[in-house]
Length: 186
Image (cartoon, rainbow, N blue to C red; front, side, top):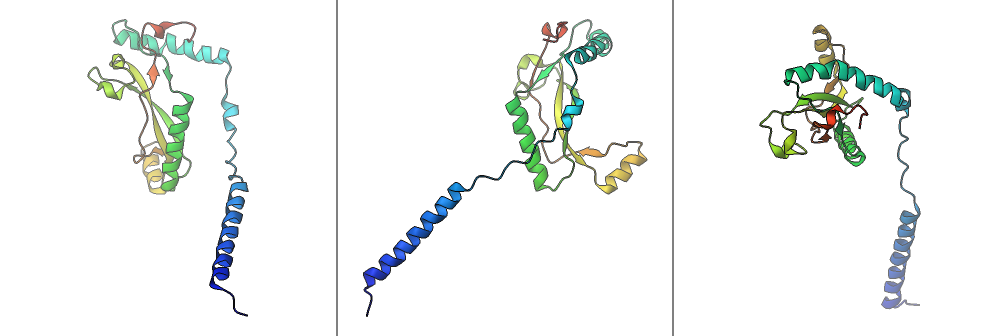
């Protein structure tokens, strides 16, 4: 018995349709892979608000006092702020770029800096921040062996180095005076 061409095409069509529906249902029903667990080593580094106050007061009595003297009695910025979303986005950016480069022990170093008086206003969160100290975030990774030997010969024992191929981050909000002198860390 000979099968008509319409039946053959219908049979092929139904086979493809069934396979497609089955694959789509499997794909939709498969949950996304779980995200790796977050490292909780930060918990050992948490401090109390009272301990934070000690650090703030010590800075106020020493380093900030020297800064004010060098600024003819004018205060400088005292705190810096990034939103959680900015931090998460930057961490994701660093992780993705470091993974592409097969870098190990990736971290972020926080550097102190100062905006020059003539710093481009589009490179600061606000133009009035010119002349104030700031911080910027620098991605780091484990040093290669050859760099390790060079650094130890110069007396440096740091095991990480700045990643020149991943951009640092700045342009956060900061506390310029008069807010910088609050005694409540507001």
